[in-house]
Amino acid sequence: MAVPAPAAYPVSFAVDLAYEARNRLTVAFRLFIAIPILVIAAAISGGSYAIAGRNGTVTAAGGLLFVAPALMILVRRKYPRWWFDWNYALLRFSNRVAVYLLLLRDEYPSTDAEQAVHLAVGYPDVPTELNRWLPLVKWFLAIPHYFVLIFIDIGVVFTVIAAWFSILVTGRYPRGLYDFVVGAMRWHNRVAGYAVILATDTYPPFRLAA
Image 1: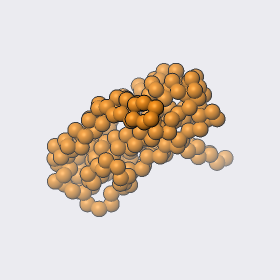
Image 2 (image 1 turned 90 degrees about the vertical axis):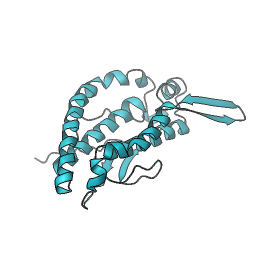
Image 3 (image 1 turned 180 degrees about the vertical axis):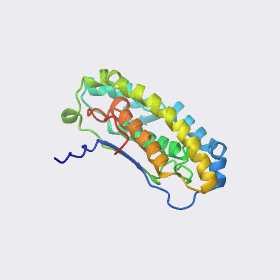
Image 4 (image 1 turned 180 degrees about the horizontal axis):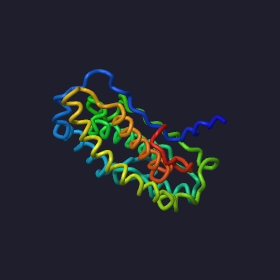
């Protein structure tokens, strides 16, 4: 009896595999080279911004928005598109920085272009796709994922160290190690889409694969 393939999750993530020989020099000094983009990422995540209009000014802290969308979904059954777009853009940018730090690609992270890092999160139709009460408990329901991801992230640290040595010696990122790190990032993004940016009510699967 054939086993059905797992259904695609509403949050998808992939990184194009680099087939060419890697840049050993930038890999060797990756932590230092990444400092400027890390400063930018920190400024975005910890800064502030304001949008002025005829009806007043809206000001919010930087970083992913959670409380405000949760309240809007609960009270108004709405998820303002610009709030979602902010979360989506920041999550995509954060993933590009992470891909660079984890040695998966050599391209310096762009602040806006997709590059080789593909994250897709659909904008939800709140009245038909989201339960208004779930934002109150999603963070709690996702606790099992947090525990699993702690151990996966420990594995990622050792995997990246091994990959660093492999790239310096052979110019290649071993495919098995590469797939594991990408899978860990995929898992993180699914949990973020569910419990943080509240884009879906579908519970994240416990798997690394797409």
